[in-house]
Amino acid sequence: MSGECGSKIYRQVAFQSSSLVVGWSRDAGKLGPKVTDYLNRQLDAQELAEIEPSDFFPLGGVSVEDDVAQFPESKFYCCQERNLVIFKGDPPRAEWYKFLNSVLDIAEQCCHVAELYTIGGMVSFSAHTAPRELLAVANSPEVKKILSRYDIVTDMDYETAPGQRPTISSFLLWVAKRRNIAGASLWVPIPFYLVAIEDPEAWRKSLEFLDTRFGLGIDFTELDEDISRQREKIARARIHSPEVDDYIRKLESNISLTREESEKLVAEIEGFLTKRE
Image (cartoon, rainbow, N blue to C red; front, side):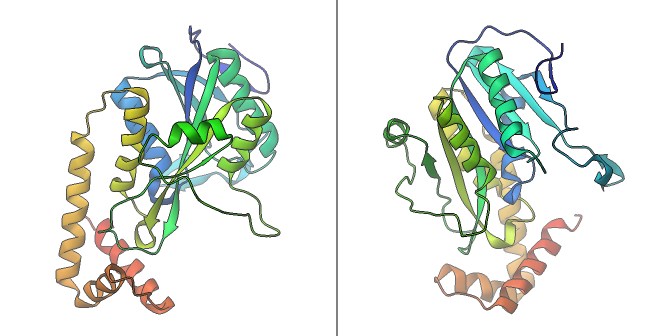
């Protein structure tokens, strides 16, 4: 079934005052795609709808990874039992406002969404051994009050730099506010040397909040195994390379690295974590 603004609706659902979780496919530490994929698996979520890419992406520049063409996708999934809608999408390359309104059109018209949470990663210059934090920006005082019940940092002060766009998540919060949809952007700071790879501890931090907020009953066993494997690999990297160990010890002591040291650490960790066993 086709909807407005180049959308396809695959099933009819009976939602009332549902919640929407938004994750972007291209995200620091793979946070957005990993969290949404984990939710979909755990909740056995069903494909609900998608936004066609033609108005928002230059299809002539499709990327190829591991010999597979990576076409942009913007899909909705749903779990009626938990009254939850999950959106996983590539950030649009054009027409941001139109795209985000298309997202909210489907969310409101098909699912009667009453609140939304975006999830994303941000770069941190702390060590991977530091506990992950969850930060939030709300689009209303009422949402901020709700978030105060959880282990979330909500007292951030931030202003988009002159000449730069706001993040896609911040823009979505603004569009949602104009439509009287309560919302918050959730952010997990990710160690800079894991930004281009994976940070399963950041995934867990986001999922813990969603699990508590919506009573999802998530099984974290698979994710905890991912965390253990990565910790072991980085521990071996520190043993293998005294230089890497020295850099991480500096970060653990809140000592900044030089640009050259940071680049070396990124290269060493990426090489070690992506090397086949």
